[in-house]
Image 1 (cartoon, rainbow, N blue to C red):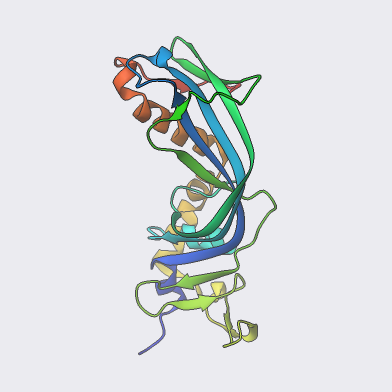
Image 2: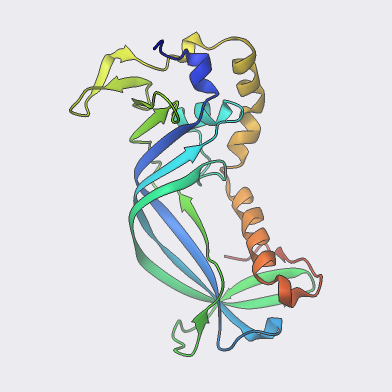
Length: 228
């Protein structure tokens, strides 16, 4: 079988693995089955470390692969990377926030005490991964549905012992050209912007409105600037 060209690899699904990332997890809490917004007593935020995390990207434009190989993320793992495996995680910080709603604005205000034995978690959690130490990928798997070519961030292959082979370049960006590369370049800025905190805030707003939809009575909430 002929190995895929750099252009073909650019537009095929890929996977990327990190040994460790930061993680934040949010979940609403209540002391009863809620029938109105006032019944939601708190939001719990857990922060910690996730280990052995693998993501998959369907790689629609090619810009996603260029962003990942270049480690051009702006602080958080973007929504176009879907987590497919997490070996373990530990929580090293827990905080509870009261909910403050003013018109269409919702804010999370730090509570003086995290202890309330009567509160229970509600619904689904909202979680996102953080590049809290400028982590590079440990490896990528290109052409993830077929040849599954494992490479280092540099584009080089690995030997059987997991050592990077400097003389075997599997993905050579200098070979990229034509329509696929042009599409990747044109989409690059938009793809990178989805890895910043503003994108996380939009996703968190969507989660809030979905979780509270039965209690909102058609109101759409937006996060205040002072929310955690």
